[in-house]
Length: 290
Image: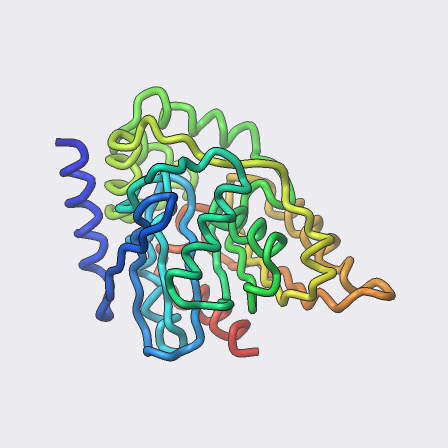
């Protein structure tokens, strides 16, 4: 029943996508990966990696704007809430996660693509760019976690009920706190709340902070967009550390890192991809076209 309810919530979120979506299931040794694609066929490819506890269905607020110029591929990460189904080879280590994403790009027929990740998806995106810089044309990180600084203790404490008593009620309370009282998107509450119950046994693959110096050495153009009111971490500390890390590519003997760090006003960590202000999509689109 819980899985059925989650699938219903997933379809309700997909119904909010204002553009036609092609749904595909890419099969590999890791299982079947659901990818929701939109935008012009033959357009520059852009791969979207959602945050922890959510799914690709939640990109409805930004995917359409990005799909005006790009072929957008929103991926359900393996082992997290979504319609991807694990296979014979489980994801246990960061190396497995990177090999899985290699397979996703192969399945999409892409030698390289721009990659955008939010939160935990930002950690995956940055890790992948370090792992395979030739396959990442441009990198966009939306308030990425565990990349330049750790979580705030208050955030982890507030998130604890999501694991002790998962469901829509605890999810709504947590999101209302993180967004400063702003009512969270109903679709996000349902996806996260029902997903936490339906996928309670799922284990998130994580690891150390990616070696940004290797990214700088490869010269992958990178944009870090931070949430002004984000509570997952200290945005000022993250901004300073990200700017310092990305500027390492400007040292003598290294390729320019082309790194930029900006703050998006009026958004929190969890509201960032879901608020249809147009500001986020504008900044990302400008960077991708630069």
